[in-house]
Image (tube, rainbow, N blue to C red):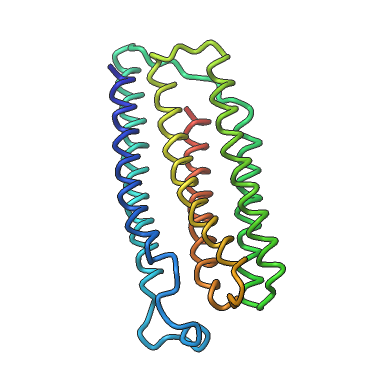
Length: 226
């Protein structure tokens, strides 16, 4: 039953993510004001793109907060009743994956810094590196799932179900970020596109990457401590 509940929560998270991502990727990731207004500083305050992103991050924070709370409650309930919770050995691959996500976030920050200094080549290199490390992280997460499966832990162990839940939902959010990253990369290759047109998109992608890194560090710490 615990496995069914965990994956039902995962499905709900996927639905929520899909609806919000569809709403946000239409406009909030792209500049909604003229490039010259971005350069000079808009008098209207924070661009709607940033407001949309921060609202999205607030929803994601609530979602992960609920998942972590459910994790602790389920684990505590099982321990109190001497139930079916069996702690798992965290796959070593997660350490490598953590390093990959740190490198991805650092590369995105490099791109953001280069955009503020109008260095188009560095922006392109930073974005490509950030995306490549992110894809490597996702591949590493799949490898960690295989390592866990090969370790002999039973799938009906709620600790295993929550491992798949937490890492899976985080991976889905990163995959959504990569879709936006891909749009930014494609836009950079279009003739006549100025760097100022991409500055806001690069900034928002970078903030999103830093946020997902922070979320992952929290999730990883929870898994290690339990």
